[in-house]
Figure: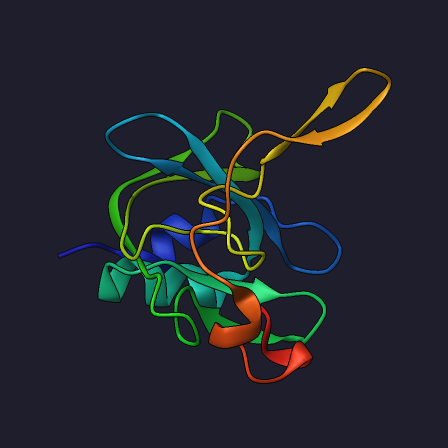
Length: 136
């Protein structure tokens, strides 16, 4: 059995009681998204095996995919050397991690003096999300 409280005690949370979390595709290594976690989201992630984050804009917990169905099954949970960042190696179910409909939140790059989209959308967010405030 995992001692979740012991793991949480070893983390260094910021002044808002958050740590940075990076979600990475377990098989390809592609970085899918960056989010934040608090103690409760860490607890729920470990207990359920699905990624749960803290939404800074909505000030509440959200299980990745609760609106879109694009859930993240956690395969590995890693903590960096300083204890202030988490790397979740995940199986991305549904094909997209980004609320914009892209597989990864990192779908733009600097090119020709500006930003260029370098990946297509996997889904149309206007169809998936009914309200603007429900965006993941």
